[in-house]
Image 1 (cartoon, rainbow over the protein chains, first blue to last red):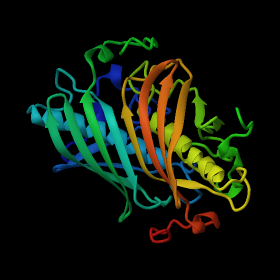
Image 2: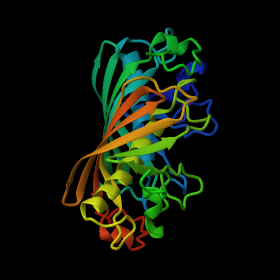
Image 3: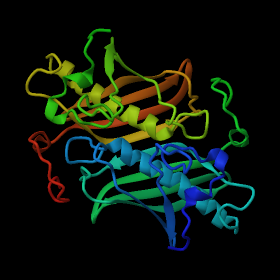
Length: 167
Length: 167
């Protein structure tokens, strides 16, 4: 791996609580993504309760992995595009504008899952990431994430639950 | 509500372990869907750990709700199409072929979420469901699920983790 520290572990602490990938969320999945050349990789082993039909992985978990791996890859890609190391100032943190998942085959339990992401486009505040999810050698799902830089006010400790806060 | 028993609570016990909606998964979300006329409704209150950026709901949870509400609605719609009550034999259990989510606004924590689904098409073994997700009156996400009837061998207690089992 190019870097020993995962993309998500570079997020500023005020935006590191994500249930999918935040290192400050002890109850979350804490997924981690790393560059392998121009492909980014995330490996995750589902827990026994993460099933759909017995024997197969829950699709919502797969969507969650592809989502956070996609936004993490988007951040890493934009740091690269800007020619600066991850974690340098100002921080880049992405949110998901859209997520698409095609479930190609039932994903068997018992194997470590590997999500592989390739960046299609980095443009302005938007990054498009295409992903594949494997269980062993079996391609089980394809995903596509359109990620955008999180608005500044989300960085500034906004904890409002007002529906209009982030309109 | 037309029925007091949720769609998901009609699933046969051998396929009722889903992390998102299975009544036999005590660690799962146990989401429940009901008809309100031709719209199906699922209400869910995120737990405190289900955050993305602090103050906002984790997108992977939203995807999970839309996924299971979509497949539950697909099953209910096909029972209706066949003119028989949910839970009658043979059972109908759907899996997700594709899931698309557009995140329109950050979804605030602190409100009960409501997913509303409308069936676009019931054709052969496939049902297409369009969904909206609200936090209070705020439309936060739109979803689209293409659901297909689960293959018979998934009903028959297949617990194999072989990648080729369900090829």
